[in-house]
Length: 154
Image 1 (cartoon, rainbow, N blue to C red):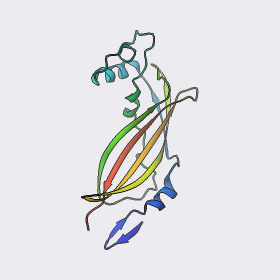
Image 2: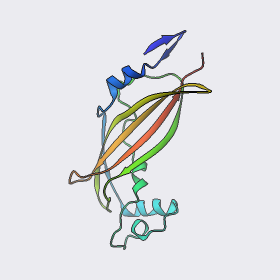
Image 3: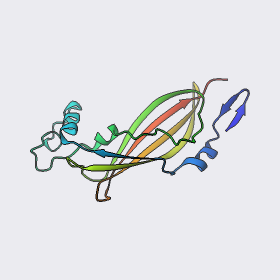
């Protein structure tokens, strides 16, 4: 962190060195087929393997994991950055099917921290990744949540 004028700004290199790839949250989720089937139908999915519990290949649609939320959004010791915080999108990397009744463990860490400068000024992006594992330890998906903080103008 450093001061420019009278405001505190994020030192991206220092944040990356201190917080990237350091696990800060773990959560357990029991996956219910009716919930992910309803999610799939709401999203407009038509494939029976995602919407019909009687389908022999019934599984959660790949983007379903973006609905899973752990207990912490950031590491407890992450500094408060000044500015306007906004959702900057989600991303999912699907690795293996998730079945009805599965118990998943989600482990979260900051995957990336970067900045961009636009017409409105400097923006700091935080990418929180939740790696999800089934009860056998199989890595089934990564769910990324991106947050942008638009720093106040000087």
